[in-house]
Each structure stands twice: as C-alpha cells, then as structure tokens.
Length: 328
Image 1 (cartoon, one colour):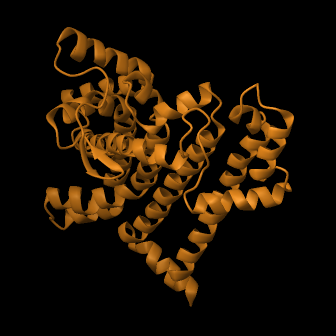
Image 2 (image 1 turned 180 degrees about the vertical axis):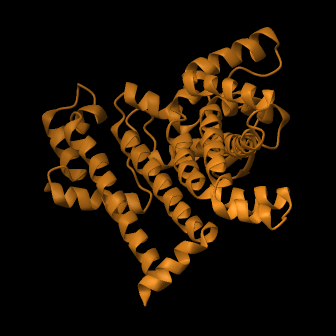
C-alpha cells in the first residue's frame, strides 16, 4: 500500500512537471511578454530594464526552475489584461466553478447510478425503454445547444429560472463566496448544472446498466439466487458493488472533465467562474492566466485520479490480496 502510494505520488509529480513545462512554453513561444506589458511609447532602454528585472535574459532552465518554484508557492505572475496577481483572480473565481461542478457531478452521479440500476433491473419495461431512448438526447446534443434550449424554455417562455449570472452570493471567507445560502443563488445553479451534467449523467447511466447486466449473468449471482437470498440483497449488495469498479474510473475522469470543460457552460450562462475568464484570457492573449489555468486544471485531474486509485482498494478487496501477494 505504501509502495503504491509512493509510486502514485512520483507519477503525479512527473505529470505536473510536464504540464508546467507546457505552461512555461507559452511564455516563450506565444509572443514577447514585454510587448504585452508595456505600451508602444516605452523606449528600448525601458524594455531592456524590464526584461532584466523579470529575469527574461536568464537561461531557459533557470527561468523554468524559477517558474516551477513560484507556481509551487501559488505565484503565477501578473495578469496582462487585469493588471492584478493571477492567483488573486483565480481564488476569486474558483468558488463559482467548483460549486457548479459539485452540483453537476452530484446530479450526474445520483441520477446516473439510480437510472442505470433501474433500467438494468427493469430492462424490458416501457419506462426503461423510454429512459434509454431519452438518454440519446443527452449523448447526441452538444452542450451549448442544451443550454440554449433550457434558457428558452425555463427562462424565456416560462420565466421560472434566471438565464444568466450567479445570483446573490454570501461571503463566508476572504476568498470564498457561495450561492448555496441564497434563494437566487440556488435558482441560478439549476440550469447550468443540468446543462453541464447531462452528458455525464447519460454516460454513467449507460455504463452502470451495461455493467449491471453483465454482473447479473455471472455464476456467483446465479449461486446466490439458488441459495435463496433476497433479490434486494443480490441486486444492491452483490451485483451493484461489483459494478462500481469501472464506474468509479469513468466517474473520476468525468468529474475532472466537468471542471476542465465548464468553459462552454460558463460562457452560455455568463457564469462568473474561471472558465469564462479563460475564454477572455485567450481573446486578449493573457499568457500568465492561461498558464496558471492549465496548471490548476492539471492539478485537479491529478488529485481526482489519485482519489480514484485509492477508492479501488476500498471497493475491490481482490486488489488488496494481489498487492499483499506481490509484496511477499
């Protein structure tokens, strides 16, 4: 277990160094940062002084090590567009993205597993067939189109929910504001969360259904039925537990994708998260923010994958046996 933990940590560090190098390369190959920081009236001497002060005349390896050292301390430089520390801007906007991703993930996970189990156990029922047919909508339609349709129906025609923004928020710390504590904040979350989580919901539902059907055909389930165990115990204790291993893998990757690819949803609903800021950063070639965004998203993916690896040992006892046998 400890050896596995050490291997995973080393792998995570290597992945983060590769992503850091890609982020650092943005500074080197996407324009001259000095031109983005000073106006046209700046003299050549002013440019050279600024270049020397920022350490841009140092060798590339030295600049890269300095970039990694600053990133470890949460320092990503000054945003070209907003003229503010990038870390401050990210900390202001990150709560909005994380809350949206949390609600979307919860929506996709609970409904996806529930509907997947139901359609597997009632696979010939009319409701199961209807759910499977309707799930094709979530898989086929692009996210931005789902968002526009929801806005048209629930915001424009019915006027039940707001079409954009985060609603009223409450500050609970210096760097964290939440919309969970206000009615308008909760209402504003509904449409973006459904838009962002619908694809993941259908994916998880279909995966759970397929795995559940496969497990229900195995010999140990037939043996459990022959022993006279209750159907509820067979379905939810024996079958569902053995269904969860591939579901955990896909769900972990999808939760990372929810955060990383919330950009489209945040743009459609003008949700004030880091995804919307990233779109604006690309438009204005704000390299410090772009590189910081890449590092933050990569860190989130690495942490989620690490948690998924740990969950394998909790869900599947066979892995613990294999690891102990390998260690002897």
